[in-house]
Image 1 (tube, protein in one colour):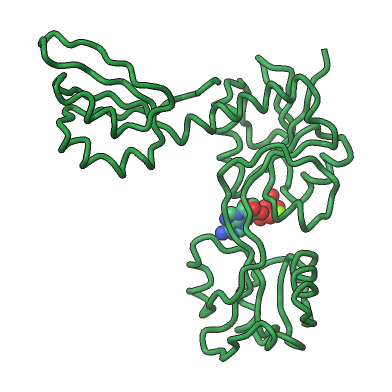
Image 2 (image 1 turned 90 degrees about the vertical axis):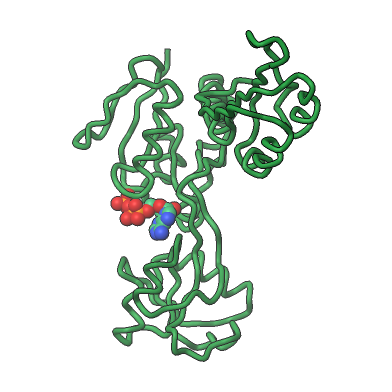
Length: 283
Ligand code: ATP
Ligand code: MG
């Protein structure tokens, strides 16, 4: 039987969540920081731990069948790969930022200005599409300090909370792209049976993350009012309780919807509300 290879980041912002996702898919492997390859004992899969910049090319060239990497890295390396699944973590945006005291208000004012970035390909395409010609200065890191050093007028860098920009006296000015971690495969890999199975496992973990298992008690006379407030995946299970006129309602609902309706549920007579995490939802 063939063994698949999946490339994930060795260390950095995506490493922990990538390992967690694969473990939640029921894959059993050692996460030794020192090893480059880790075999999975209960699935024909090997995990390659790499620098994130190398992952798109490894996948394009078929050295790895799959990879987990930020969309920003895929766009920047301009590889031909198949996007298989968005993974919901590693969310950030690539933004142009300018010093706080800068009077730039319009993108056109960046014409002829120097912009420092580690993403010259994405930035170049963006500026071209906007009809702007700036001097793109490619640097390999610490982009946020370059305006302060007089190396550039603006920067283009990844931002999640904006804290790094703020502490360097910069303000976000324009959104270039938004990004999150994605599962990629070599072209055509989406038709492979083993890969399909792995994608299904990943999807069942992702679905479970967004939903909660909710149990609550309610008097039978208030049952209709309470269930009307529960937009369940399916109709809720209603279980009789030892006390004759009370029932327990079990349901699976998106966490977002639940928090919106919690006070209404209480008003409608729901008591003893218990919210539990779900490990997997297999459709
Ligand atoms: P490597 O050593 O693997 O090359 P790196 O230093 O290039 O790592 P990290 O800083 O670990 O990369 O970021 C990995 C990915 O995490 C980014 O490419 C991006 O998709 C995502 N990310 C999420 N939030 C942020 C953020 N605030 N800053 C940078 N990257 C972020
Ligand atoms: Mg990198």
